[in-house]
Image (cartoon, rainbow, N blue to C red; front, side):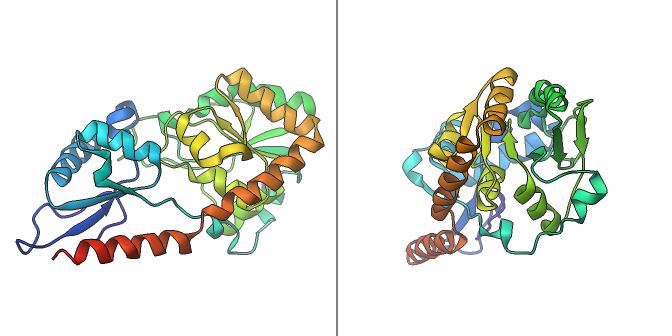
Length: 276
């Protein structure tokens, strides 16, 4: 069993079985985000895994259908196990990150993720330029693995970049943000928004099917840069909206627990390995 998108192509015995979690079909759906070498490797690997005795698991209904479409297999062959969120607050918040970055609680908007093109942080340029007029900041946390992703860091002149942070620091950034914004145009699940909800932070998300599936009614949605800016400002301008989103977010994340995911995975393992 492998939880990280890969697995052996040759199994040791004729009746051997394996389970591989493929989190998304990004190399097919957003190929511009990935280096050519990584693209070729993952496309070939996933096609071969789908043609063998591999039980595929993924993290959302959207991802299941997208993977099935690209690998040309029946979606019924793919099981769905959603991710968890409680890790976001498992460790105590380290607020020194705010002091070092010159941030004031409630006075910034947080964005989190790697800097791959499909994350579309460039769509936050409008927001980054607008927030200082309200005495607010856009804060971006994340990094880039150039061996996997084919891009440069987005240049948002009015944003504050804090780079990679510890889990404790990330907890503090989520908890003390006035709002969390997630501009990604492609995800298999979209973990940062539910991490933000777990920490009690109101969420604005890109209006794409998978984020509608994962976040439900616990987020505000926008598609264009101006839409995203408008939704963020709505949270700051209307305390009732912010309170409603915090409450809805806490309810939403109750369905995203690692204990639930582990139980479903154990059921799949028992079912699959009973065939050996």
